[in-house]
Image (cartoon, rainbow over all chains, first blue to last red; front, side, top):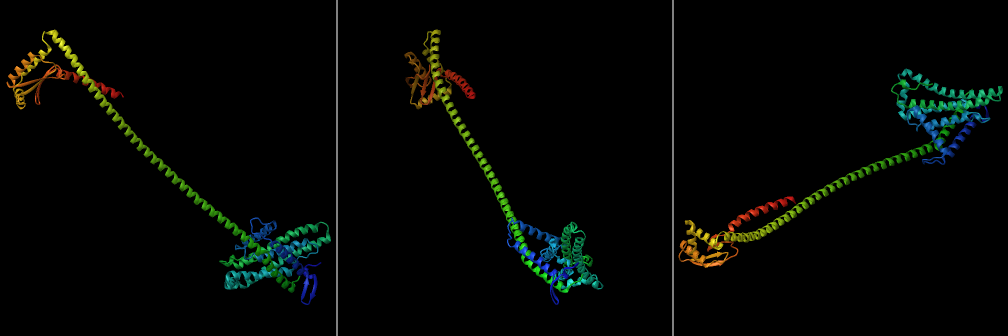
Length: 231
Length: 260
């Protein structure tokens, strides 16, 4: 039994390999890009948008509101990054209902890559918002002794992001695989439906945590206590 | 459960590509459309606000015009009322003046009528009185009334006081001794002789006396010396009667006017 789609390799040339994680990631990306392209091709700015456009705008508005609520900042800056994260993770998880599909988020490499993106996004948006000096000063707050702890905190929360998503999705896949072996008729379906809910919730949690981390790096805290503690 | 470094790098790149593509094909167009719609709604709201303000201003303008019209109407009504009052006062004054004129005319006509009536009455009374007196004197004595009048006149001449006599003598001198005796009846020769004798004895012996008859002189005689006159007639009695009648008529006329 495979625990990660990384293990299903279609083609390999030395260091370079084409595994199920990459293939299904491309599939998810293709679905997202094509759907976005087809939906945004006929956008109208009138007061009566089409049904699809209304749903799309409702989704974007929902994401924007969530980002603004969590970050207390204008959501437009973070919307493309957080929205892409959410849509990619959510679609990756939701597509598990398709037979023979392996969710890329069940790969620790994918979740690590996404957590790495968040890890890099924190200084990117933080420096953009506060400047390099001000951003780096946060790591020696309240004094220099806290510098290693702050760095450990940054790394650990990135690690926890990756492990949380991977663990949830991988465990779901493993449970379904085990149930298929034990009771192949009804329980896998129930667990798969349950897995859809878990997948969307995990996408939401990952995105919100990313917002919180980025916002804590971007916001000018009055003292170190106001920094959001890593989870 | 291992991390494949190549897969991590590939997924990192994959996500960045996805980020770029979704930003290009999803977020940017949708946000732009939403902002356009928001701007459109905002502009419509601003337009609506502007229209509302314009309507408010127009309403204020109309209310102001209405108030001005009401003021103007009140002013015109007041002006018309004042003019009507003026006209009323003027017409009343005119009517009063006309009425006063008519009343004046009526009074004048009444006075004239009264005068005419009194004159006619006086004449008739005199005649009646004369006739009555004539008949009475004739019944009382055998003397003619004229003779009695002559006698009375002669007694009056003889009883003149000094001032009256000298005044008459002076007037006679100025008239070069010419005197005129008016009588309401033809004097008998005897009466003429008596009168002439008495006049000459009282005034001047060179007196030239002429006789004239005048019906206006009621039952009497009148001696005329230029502007001086000496007379006796029933006129004085008739004058008293006339005054009495006059007063009576005036009282009646005033009572009639007051009753109008």
